[in-house]
Length: 116
Image (cartoon, rainbow, N blue to C red):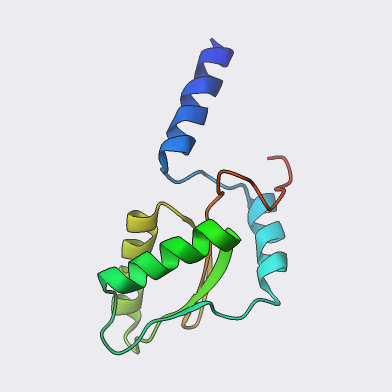
């Protein structure tokens, strides 16, 4: 039974749905993201298809990125963060101020996560 669960979980993660990161894994990713600069900067137009495409490209290339969100309103910012996570299938590692840290494991894993 456990083996069946493992393969179904593996299949779900390969499809692109979000994976649940443990606290230990999130702490590890936060440490790695500390020195990163934002790769994607959202402009005054907000969340567009072009911005989502750029986030997807950056996630496939880097796995761990920072996105700078240009929104003054907290509710709007939270809605944008939720939309990015939903559309990209990435994991929300952290939001500090206007900066969002995203993680999405690519086919050739570049970042080794600690065990749960």
